[in-house]
Image (cartoon, rainbow, N blue to C red):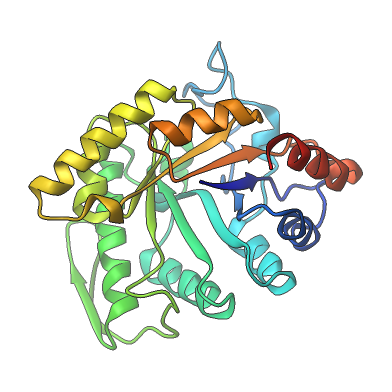
Amino acid sequence: MDIGVSARASSDSVDPAELAKRAEELGFESFWLPEHPILPVHTTSRYGGTPDGSIPASMADIGDPLIALAMAAAATSSIKLGTSISLVPEHNPLMQAKQIATLDKFSGGRFLFGIGAGWLREETEIMGGDFEHRWGQTREAILAMKELWTKEEAEFHGRFFDFPLVKCSPKPVQTPHPPVLLGGYAANVFKRVVAWGDGWMPVRVTEEQVRAGRAAMDELAEAAGRDPSTIQLIVSNVQPDRDVIAGYGEAGANRVTVALPPDTGAEGLNKLERLAEQVL
């Protein structure tokens, strides 16, 4: 099972290029960055990562993941580079397809496209997304990007996105395209993964939930005529404990990620090394 590390490109963090380079040297398989373009000052949305639903102040200080991953790509040669996660409804798929293809090409095919539809209603709406139909919007955006990545001339005509024949280059190195990994634990997540994704990327889940998720996806894949082994399962931000990680592997995970504390500052590299000692 592969082990990656997730971090944040924030105002006081270590240069993501330096951090990714050291992560590669230490033996981490992948390097992941999150996304929140903006954080609304006033919101009624609840965050699932805290007991009271409050949104951590650090969430307001997250750099653009694709720019930071491009920096990381230039400083590394083998570590995979992923978004954990990209908020697809907050982007134009034509522009995002171009950015991702460019990153995948010049990193030598190392990009992993972790995606989600978002939980912060006010952010989604400010950024132009349709919160009530965010998963439908996400599905269309991914289908449109796949057309742009795999065809010399592509068009798309949907409810949320509609464009005539266009040319969009460069193309990704990975064929047919970088893997699309769906985050979250929404009611239909397994159906979505099997229908138009390449993997499931949950956070804050138990071994039992991972085992049940793996079984559900395998069953749906077989019913759809799809090889279950083509579907990845990545557990995000797990406890940095070897026994816990081994348990997720036994439950069916192909990869886990451990999180570097967000307040990395100048101690970021030292914290990364201590994290590697705990899990690798």
